[in-house]
Image 1 (spheres, one colour):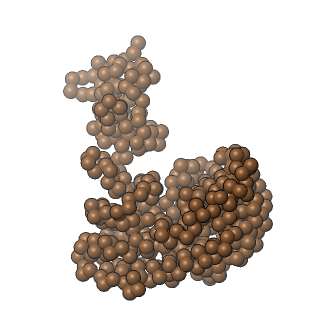
Image 2: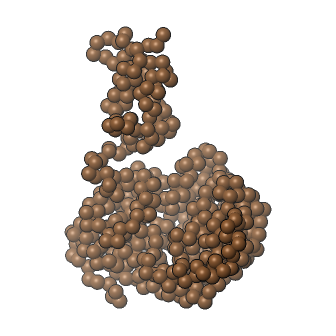
Length: 480
């Protein structure tokens, strides 16, 4: 017979309702139900456990009182993130209402707000890329492959582009064959394939800390155990790295040697050599993500060039230098691993986009490409110098000062946690990227922000920050 919980003493919730509430609370704690998930309906729970509906109602009311779930009129009950109180409806559209959520910044990156100053943006200003407009190349792409564009491509990706990438990699000192290259749907698919291939749930994996937040999300989704390697101005903290390698025996270390996201720092040659030695001696593979390769000199230090893909896996992309809309990336690695990854790619995604790959190949082979890179690097170098002037004028601390970097990791005077700062600047349409988002421990306050050098040069940014932190308005940067 179904128990309706009526045996409870007056003034005390039914024991069965308490038990049900504890069960659902434990499922929420274990991740069975995640923040934002809808719980089963009252009727479904009652039928599943053979409880009276009133008992289930009492259990759900207890969960609401504990701040674990919320009722939504006409929709049901939804799991709350207990670390952050839900905002009133009028604040729900505010960008910082879920600032600790990795998906939050990803959503903001995909929005287009022409009148906002996107200081936390991960991309260069659109005008920097205008001379590589895709409409200039479309007809050439169609003429060279009309028949094949109606079918899936090779599991490795478009062969002529892989040949072009062999030459491109050679320019930065990486000797590779086409059989060592797998084209992907951007750098993020490349990371996803490597996570699927190497990491079982619970496996230890090393990441830069602070580091690339979408990677953190992917690793959490895979159930991997993330271990942060502190980032210093000249690369990873090798003492901390050595301890983590010895203790946890991770298979992979995901890192960015150059134009590190979010700190903008570059690895030193001495540290790069020692990093390779440590990983080799402990049996760990290095995954070198190089999304801003086109912004850096070909002579810059890269792990893949020093190691020649023996224990390194190199990830490249064209999202920052051509267009994020193309979604073309690649993996360069050992030939046997490349074949396995190509099979995994075929299983998971069938193929990447040959149309986009043909587009990138045409763009690389055109004479405009080299001129584009020359202008891109000059623009970035000038913007970096001018942005440093603005930040110095605000009395800010800058983590690293490379000659050119799309990002500057910045701490402002008197600001202990950049989440409130970012929230306060939203009404002025200044959109920041708080440091917590880039941390392995997102619950820990951070005084740092990722600042895009192109956006820092907007006068509205300097004026808004000066008012917020109580300093004199800095003079316009020289050469602006």
